[in-house]
Amino acid sequence: MLLTRGAGSRSSLLRAALGLGPRPGPGPGTGRAASGAPGQGWLQPAGYDTGVKVYNSLTRRKDPLIVSNVDAVSWYSCGPTVYDHAHLGHACSYVRFDIIRRILSRVFGCNIIMVMGVTDVDDKIIKRANEMNVSPASLANLYEEDFKQDMAALKVLPPTVYLRVTDNIPQIIAFIEGVIARGHAYCTAKGNVYFDLQSRGDKYGRLVGVAPGPVGEPAVDSDKRHPSDFALWKAVKPQEPAWASPWGNGRPGWHIECSTICRAAASQPGPVVLQVLRGQSCTGWCRLGPDSCSVRFCGTRGFSGTGHVAGEQKCHRPRCVTLDSVTLLFILVFGSHLDIHSGGIDLAFPHHENEIAQCEAFHQCRQWGNYFLHAGHLHVKGKEKMSKSLKNYITIKDFLRAASPDVFRLFCLRSGYRSAVDYGDGALLEAQRLLHAVAAFAEDARAYMRGQLAGGPVQEDALWESLGRTKGAVQEALADDFNTPGAVDAVMGLVHHGNRQLKAASEEPGGPRSPAVFGAIVSYVEQFFETVGVSLVDRQCAAGAGGPAVLHSVVEELVRFRLKVRQFALATGEASGEAQRQQLLERRPLLEACDALRRDLAAHGVSIKDRSSTSTWELLDPRTEDPKPGS
Image (cartoon, rainbow, N blue to C red; front, side):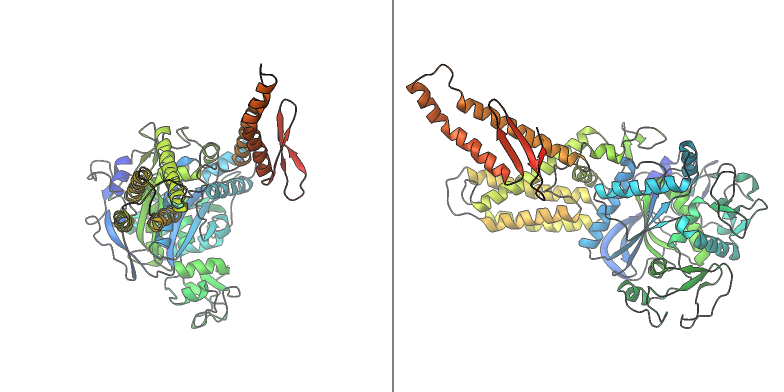
């Protein structure tokens, strides 16, 4: 779903939706304005105030982030359309929202329940599968697993659950039936089902203020009532996967899938949410536990039971679907309202706008999603969005062969999540330099604490004061729409102050030392970076198959250097007699150092063997002690 759909120059509208530029007024051919001023009509939720102010695309301002329940914050993330390898443009969006998720969880105490939808049936998937002469299902499975591996390599936390479109076809059909029953969709003679945009009146266009002109869907537009109507169900076409439905064989439209995965009953069970989350019996709503509960969902009536749902009538409609415990859990958590919805800014229109229309029509509510968060694009060459269509992308796998996921994460941290960010070697090198600077400071501070770094006392009071100020500045920055550039700057200021004190101490004669303050600073700095997913320990380790290759190269260089030292120590040149013996005696410490290094490396599984004119090494398998050839 991190996929730009439809043509068009919507960039000014999208920048305005992110609060990064002026909002264009309606003009000839641009579409129609949504009702009211920005933010008018938005209902501030009741519940737990997280203490964060977040830029909300619905209001185009910073609003207090208030969640319905801090123990079960509902978050829906648009996931991938799995037809090819993911690239750095995708990575940038997912890493940025992963950072926000970690901050909400670890700094502001929110227990986040995140659902990510996976689009595994789609025009692009079908086209690519036909080109490769494989089934769309097998292609989608391949690239779904590929995507998950990429996210793990980038250290993006997995969602609480992934939900595929094809695993939820009955639920999608039931949802569409509900939208039709409420008078917001219609079926055509060809077997297509469209959302009737006219039925929304002036409520459409809340995310972008001015809804652009009709965004057509190729090959199925001819039987629409209105050009702006969008497909909920697409009638079957030759050589395409299809499922049976009340309207004939076909497959879901693009926008309906996310709405269905997020959807819930028109009435929320309430306290049962936490009971099910804790694995307890949901007595009072359903008498059985979540693993045994069999609740049916009807497109017209909502929840109904199969004989064990307290206070509910049985529903005998043939197209009711039984929900497994995992799906039931997220219906219970999400209810008819959603706390947070996230995705790339290119998804604001039409995808998220259409989701809002569908869900508010189905749930018959004024406000389905409370906060919409949109990430800016990753740009190359200053202006172009990184995308497959422009053929200017770098796959995540190719990037990680040469760079660290921690460097990329720090690169993302150094810009606001809503802003477009330019990708280039200079920006990555700067992120790498900062990461090395932090790691070097931590190592020097530890050396000072151990007494290994020569030096005397430092200005301890100033350092404690600086640490206190930094903590306050970081908290304030993160509470201000997750201002990670401001937080990183504050931490780097603390690091620079600490470095200056270490340098001053090293120029003074030995004396009383101040290890406690440096211990507190190092602990805080490492804790900050760990909170946002950056590891200072693994800063130089590349992901994937590069790890063993790097280790091999390091050992090779070390053994080669040792060989040169050993050959120098043994060389006598023109010397003879007493001069030769004196020379060997003077160089004996070098030979002893070479022997000590060989013994030390052997303890780590590296066996060095000295030959007449060279040295070879092999890696010992610690499980069998059998040698593996090195060089």
